[in-house]
Length: 80
Image 1 (tube, helix red, strand yellow):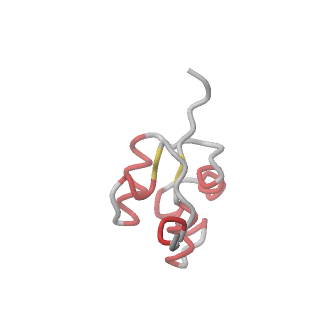
Image 2 (image 1 turned 90 degrees about the vertical axis):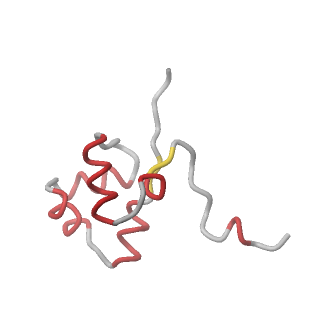
């Protein structure tokens, strides 16, 4: 199997809550650069870290992570 890509909404969740990369990293116990790598898709989290991220944001896993690209915001609500 080729390179496995996992898409995520970490940056969006962080932005809508006004949380810096450093604040999220501190809460998760990781280096702030790790959050950047995760957001850019350069690093896939372990299952344990992924679940901790979801717990931190208080959302289900499928809200944060996907095997398919997330639709652009507003894309599904535009009139035809």
